[in-house]
Image 1 (cartoon, rainbow, N blue to C red):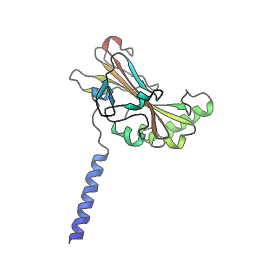
Image 2 (cartoon, rainbow, N blue to C red; image 1 turned 90 degrees about the vertical axis):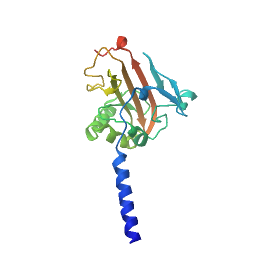
Image 3 (cartoon, rainbow, N blue to C red; image 1 turned 180 degrees about the vertical axis):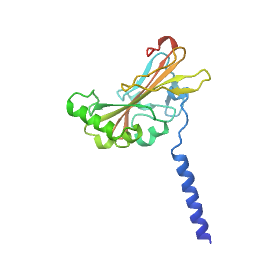
Image 4 (spheres, helix red, strand yellow; image 1 turned 120 degrees about the vertical axis):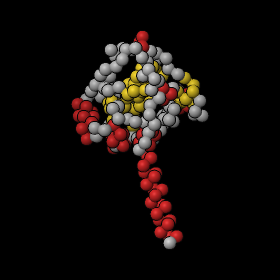
Length: 195
């Protein structure tokens, strides 16, 4: 009897864990702030871009609200975000724009094979010698303070948005299942250039 109770309890616990595994919190304005490794806000972008490429030691001591930093495991840590609707682009393995037809063809194959950004990221290690994956999205702050992800064109720019509100942008570059750089950007209503 105890054995059956233990088995049922184990099944119940696994089911509960599985139900919560795919849930991610909604986007908030705080998702676009920069934090130190202790979770303290160290920078809030205002009409500027804040980028972390690993060129300076400080870059390794900065993270997002959800703990994404240079070296984060992409398919674990990036999945703390709702990535639906994110733009998926590519750089070559050295981090430069795609140059030759072979690189461009491979990038198109990845997009065709994995149209969902999350699925593409899961397979970034398969392309470690050829491609880096670049994901990004634009957001707008609503009157009630909530954050809305904007629908994107094929080139990654927003399709439509309001002119009279604040906007944010976030991007991550992934190579071999690791975050190799990330950035956040803020646009005040006066400087929104995607009208």
